[in-house]
Length: 284
Image (cartoon, rainbow, N blue to C red):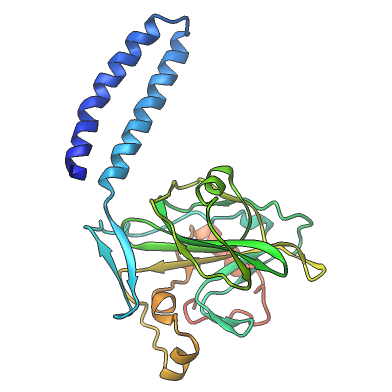
């Protein structure tokens, strides 16, 4: 049975379900407000299920051609694309700039540091609707860390790393994710698709509670446009040292540029959170 036919059946049955639920509710002692709320929740869930069935776009990276491609018909991305910060920037102590070498490795992603915090309870929220493409759970300094990538239909991808505690729903969805050894952050493709909604809490704690005897409270954040490359040229020596550059580096964006004007000003006013300063291949 095709997805289109299944979607049509759902659309036809939603009104019948609502009528049946209304009839049942009239035979109960529920208040009119409770009845209305229950019917609305059922209707919204049915609409959401139909939307997911119709969302047949998937993205994948081809290791042979070194390119991203969509399976399905991706819609055009919003123009302009403006998103809310995934974390409360008023609590931040510094910014990790995307497109620089940190810790001896090239990092297409940036991040946000919270060195002025005593606890790790920083909430991270989804900046857009999408589905989780892949994720990893691994040990770093003996402490579990979680990373994942989520993508929207038009081809914008978000990367986060150093989640410490996931929200209950995301934790349940990723409960079978294998735990990698120390430093082994290789990802696992998540199937079936796990969807996230804009504004949904993804993690409730970030970073390390004890990183070699010190607190280390931060979260990585990367933004990528999979529909086109960013124009940054990397030479052969760089590519040899950084074999994933075509998957991430050539598609990475300066995520500062896509925040609201107020949040962008705040980000640019914060000190650089690492030894590498504000050097960036993407942020000018």
